[in-house]
Image (cartoon, rainbow over all chains, first blue to last red; front, side, top):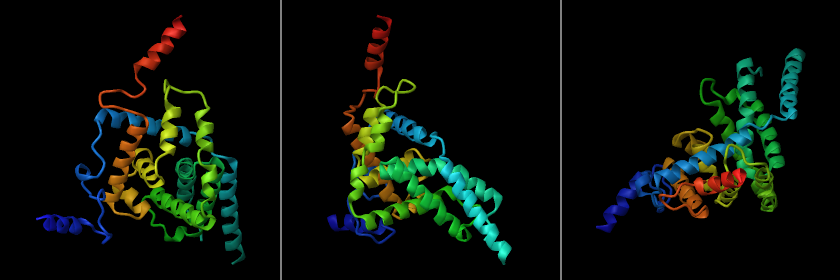
Length: 81
Length: 182
């Protein structure tokens, strides 16, 4: 009966990749054990705090200058056409 | 090719998120900025392929990620040397909002395998759905789900979190308060 199980797993793989443990689309059947929802929340909270710190860093002027430069190059091109 | 004003403004507004993702991939602020710069130039050059009304941020993240991996292939493995430098700088900043343990968290995050960290950041912090993250990473949705799940489990292990225990919980805060009062 093990063969049947392998077959059904294979069908779920939409990309035709070689099926491996843990690539199952259903979270309950993934290789990693389920973790405590409270721990999951704590991890999520810290992850977002970490990411928000990065997002809230000021944007360096060089990016704004780069966009202006790109824009100028476009308008110069269209003028010469 | 003219880029509409709205699109240009959306592009500008996406930069902080692109930088945050780039830092997560490279582990280095300097390298992240190079990557963002390259992404902006690539995006500008191929804006005609972008369908207005679809998710610009996902489109940009895909470009950035592809650029990162193509640079990685070109450079080989020297990237490792920058690993952790940026995280260390962040870790040296004073803790904010009572996050006594952000430094530990960042260190644990930097220890995750790259594919797991990437999936966790996209889904858990950048606000993408599993489907969008899978499109960005060019893999199956199930693969993203599995990576996110493994990343969480690994983080819990690295941070030695046990069920029932609250991370960053009162013992530390309580001892700080006691010290402050004393």
